[in-house]
Length: 298
Ligand SMILES: NC(=O)c1ccc[n+]([C@@H]2O[C@H](COP(=O)([O-])OP(=O)(O)OC[C@H]3O[C@@H](n4cnc5c(N)ncnc54)[C@H](O)[C@@H]3O)[C@@H](O)[C@H]2O)c1
Ligand SMILES: N[C@@H](CCC=O)C(=O)O
Image (cartoon, rainbow, N blue to C red; front, side, top):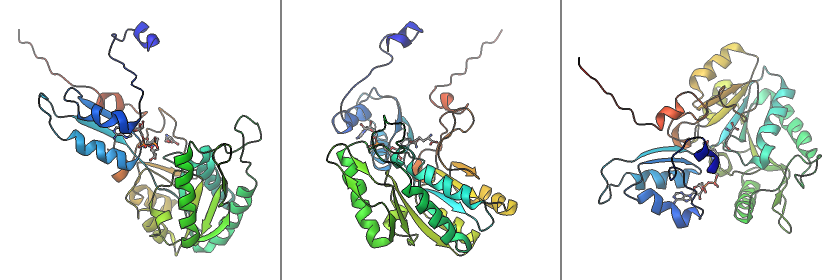
């Protein structure tokens, strides 16, 4: 804060208010002197903020504006004409980087049936090679998930996954010291299953088989989210179709679905992933400003 004040920000403009969302969240959102809310977090909290911000409280003389960057249920689609090694590497990196705790993480792998078995078996092979452990160790790929609540929620989804799909690898956790969960792959999951629809925010990826590329896109769009997605394909016509029909805010071709770079890939999703704004892009700052037109006649 001091650094920003030294840079010229007036004192009192930036305030750090520690406290849990449950404790201070509603108070801040409801307050009549709150004017603008810029939120990053889950769908449920985003919806709560959006609803509460709409209410005008006594003494409030403006309508509150809200930018919400919310969750995702992001998919990587693999076409039958594709570099299958790239597909498997992209799925593993996007599903398990940061223990899957990224809004952009790949939690659905949608594979055209001609190459389904090949991609699945390579992903399982690569996943078994990942080291889970102390993130301070050089050899560790995946550290723990953030806390006990996250651990419990993810382990619950893994139990649901065991009913909804075929457990291929992982499925185990250890919270004796830290909150460690093995990277987990489920195969043959119905597109409408809970683990294909609900954000898990952990190291779990579900595979679904598509009849052809059109069917794969249909499955990919079959969630209430629309944050990131990727297509692995060598078929230009299919990539162009995805460009128009894959309804996500950040779409990637022939790479994973995480790791947007500020300035290059402005980031933000459609539908229940947010308010269609793009962080890290040229328009974002302007969204937070109040425009005023001044005209003087001479
Ligand atoms: N779209 C994006 O750019 C983006 C980026 C990162 C994370 N996410 C999403 O964030 C979620 C994970 O983060 P999380 O577990 O911290 O999310 P969360 O929704 O639980 O919490 C987010 C923040 O909101 C605060 N909060 C909680 N209740 C509140 C309330 N009633 N009013 C106001 N604020 C409240 C929390 O204290 C926290 O700081 C995932 O859903 C993930 O997809 C989205
Ligand atoms: N912008 C990041 C995701 C941020 C959310 O966790 C990405 O593109 O992977």
